[in-house]
Length: 292
Image (tube, rainbow, N blue to C red; front, side, top):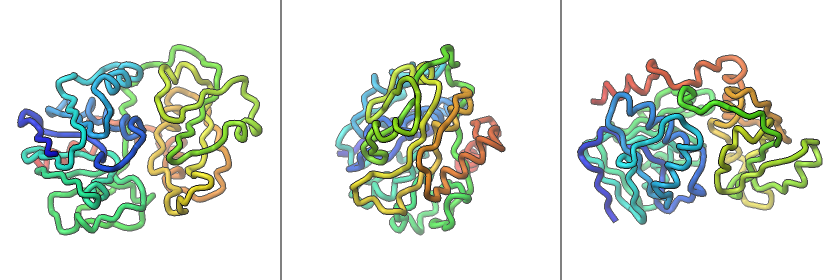
């Protein structure tokens, strides 16, 4: 199926969808919301959802977390889409997996393609030689520069639009999704003595920030699965930065391996927090102006 983006939009923001399972709502969904709300101050921006997430599900997520919510007419939804046709637009893919999408038979036809790199397993061979493709990555995390237009860039968060924390909360939070953090909660509880726990395995938790007073960060790993050591990379852990913003302590459970993504994010949280905030000075705006 081909989906054609209406000409009224300048930019389309999404994450890879064709035969790729993100568990629907993920950190990349929040990145889409952050960058949509930020870029909408300067451009006509659309959100494309091709993974089965509905308009209402995305709006509920935004209402729960942000002061501002997307315009419903800016959310484009299409299932079973193999080809995204955005001939006159710049497309931004927040999970960096456009190359994986292409290798699985999906395609994006667009004026410019910008990807935020996330992970080491993607092959960019299908995108080499394309002058209109830009790979934004944190050079502290990735040693290679696989595309000619590879640019050092740090993914940001729109802290200015996050709702304030209004309650202390009384639970520790565990993010135990089945795709990359498959741990038994009882195993983790043996290490801590919190009175109660909130666990997320798939669906987002409403009013999460007001419900918790701690976050237990668990390793990127699926016990018993075939996941390789190269996949043990948390490219830009979002929640530990949010916890710093809300003054919620983070506890690290069994981080006995090297994760450059986690290390870079922890460094910024502890030493350069301002650099994680989406501001008018962000390089992405400069790049978009150059590509206009």
